[in-house]
Image (cartoon, rainbow, N blue to C red; front, side, top):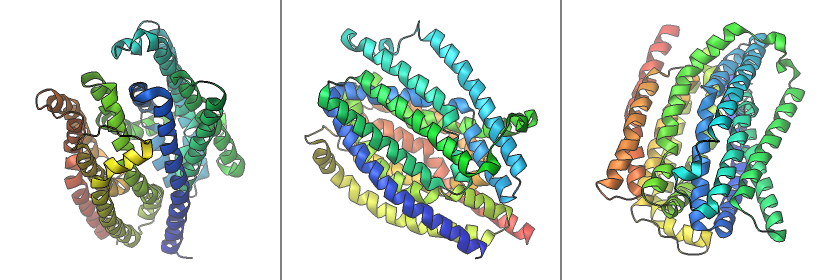
Length: 440
């Protein structure tokens, strides 16, 4: 079987498996959100979503090592260099472990003096529960920095669809536990935080064990650790790190801004529309996620015919997603009503701006998947930093001075990422044209 046929077969397999598992996770996630709202109420659910958004910021603490490992591992596995691959794996685990430990100590000290409940002016009856929930989520996310390295490991061996299966299993387990506890006792925000903390850690450890058990050639030992790789992977991952920081500011500060400037109830309606439109992005990632390692392999083997052909096919897929978004915009309020079971106040313009956001994000990702795979990050880095700098001030301006409400926040996000939509296709075209002519 030729390389083109093999890559296409890998891509199709990941898409088929990913579609099935994502369908399960979407159904389960919708059921979970409905349960959370019924158990907590819209106000406390809004706090839960905001807490989860804030805690997700800790993911930047890996300083881009996860993404750096993904690219380096794909490169050296394409070259059948397992020694180098093991060196990068163990070095990544050691560095992430040290970073997690340091952050945990700092957080534990600061948590005694700065309480998240005070920042959001949470009423006294809820303050203790909110602070405990935040603590549990932080501990879970810090542990997850190292545990979740199984994701770049799976992507590098072209098993990205397994990540979708694992996520679906985690969500299903969480739903089963929530429903089981609900049948015998009341559930608080602390209980939900504990369940969402423990299950991902346990499943992540199990997956990591099974990965190395099934691929012993990649099992790293401490003597595989190379201090030279620390600089290599952190300098390469450093650009990813700055891009990650920018992405977190652009994509995950929305709930915090809305909770602080409007209300936690407004967070609930915003999050429901986001969760609904996010499914379009999820569908897109079923196609794009397996491609990073495949693009990397094809580039290092000078297979430009496959790369260009695949990018053309991705543009064709994007046209169908545009149709899906335009259908979802007018239907979204009715879908949410059926989903939750009662009317939720959805700002009229919110679905329209979320539709625009989804299309902008997907189209830029279409080209960023390839550019990330070949390590061309500089232009993306500059644009991302500029977007991060303007995002929060724009959000505040739209809410405070133009009285746009929560849809002003997603409009600010659209403006922040728009330059990527213009520049990344041009960069990809010029990069491929130059390398194709110089390698032939």
